[in-house]
Amino acid sequence: MSDSVGKLLERYTLEHPQEVLIVRVKIAAEEDRIVIFKGFSSSLVRGTEFDPDVPVLPDEAEILDIDRVAAPYHPDAPQYIERGLSWAIARDRLLGAKEP
Image 1 (tube, rainbow, N blue to C red):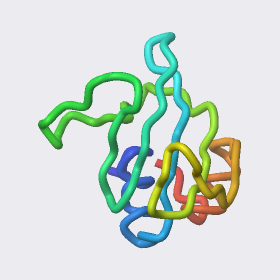
Image 2: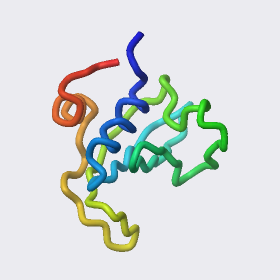
Image 3: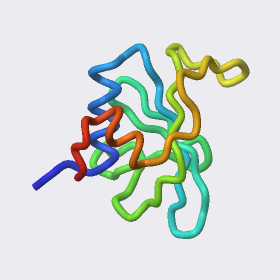
Image 4: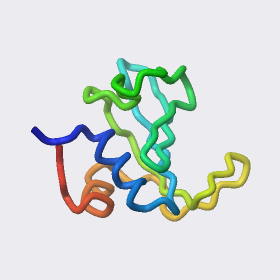
């Protein structure tokens, strides 16, 4: 079985610790922004579960876009590497087309 999108993005940030991913998603008709850094995900909009088995980025989430930001992430002055990547472009560029 292949990994979820969230796990793939978390793995990417483990392999590229100089980057932070900010993922804008729609979950159950509500928009959320998820920060992924060094293998960990955290919601900027809603609470994040303490249980690591509960995915912050569920499989049913619709990815609206992904920003690549230089680490460390400074919310007041982020240093963008790329902004507004679609999932298709991010999948190909960041994950080498490893679709879950």
